[in-house]
Length: 85
Image (cartoon, rainbow, N blue to C red; front, side):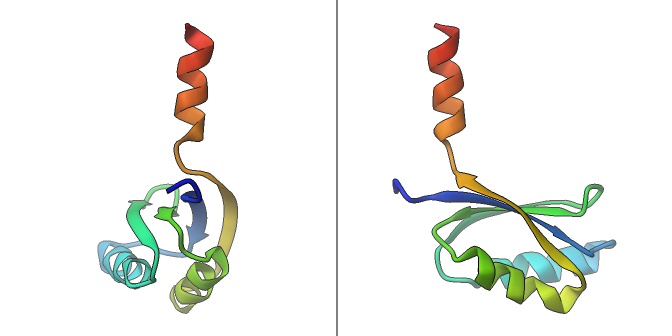
C-alpha cells in the first residue's frame, strides 16, 4: 500500500450520463481503489496503483483529458496531523 497514488484528471464531462460512463471506464482499470467525480470542476480523482497514462488514455474518448497531478494518497493528512501536535 505504500505506493498508492492520488491522481487528479480534468475531463470534458458535463452531464450525469457522461459522468457515469467515465466512472465505469476508470473503475475498470487494474489498480484503481476509489474514484470520485466533481462535475462542477470537471475533475476526476482516482486513488490506487493504476498507471496515470493508462487512465488518461481511457478518458480521452470522453473528450479533452488533462492529467493535473499525481501524488501520494494519504501522506498529506498524516503530515498535517503531526504538525498540529
